[in-house]
Length: 342
Image: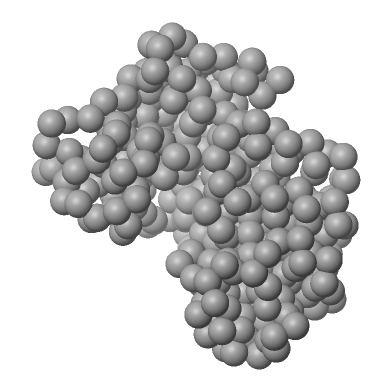
């Protein structure tokens, strides 16, 4: 397989982890040949680490896309900067893999989808939580039919971020709808994945308890009707105390015709079948999990394999759920996802 040249947008934080994963696990398939970041110190430190000279380091999108000889682009910058990089790369003839959420607004996300449709180039969005062993096991059980038909799925995310800056950065405590844009974007996609359907109708509420460290809503509950008749329910809480289900330990329960499946952590599975004893086990390991699965899948796509499951044309369904949750929290009215992404 060809070794693909990559132009990387972002060099610190999550982007720094991208650099680690690409160089550490996929160095035989991809090489970072250009780096874009607005911070000079990041450009210098990461550039030196990657062996990039000054002509391969950029502080603005247009210059990078015009000057760097790359085969594809990776974007791990804040979401408000995704559109410029993603649309610019696609229009320059380069496939793209980008972090979630797709963008900061639905209008921006639509323009990005339009660019992918117009150019016909691969464009994938990171949804790493799908690729944990026990989430894959729920889907296997659903597709096998061994527990009968699926009725509904319940998901719970609960982190104790009651202290200022406890969620990594203070800006997460200060932003509007931080729960939805920084947290639920993962979990709504997971409910789509586990249920096997797209969301048709979403309704619910958001609020901020008096003891919260957040300026805006840190808690919410949302009910969804999916396209295949399955219903899903989501509890999100960034001001949790007591029993928590924080990152990589969220709790999901799938209720089937002949039993239920519960998962938590990354590999824990519990099945309760009708008339049988409770069964707990660890899900089989995956060749690649989380981000690394998505990188491998995307590189396979570039090499002629099938499109990524989280291609942008599909993933806008998950982002539209975030926007619907914002809107229903604001006005209390049910939202139709088809109207948002039409």
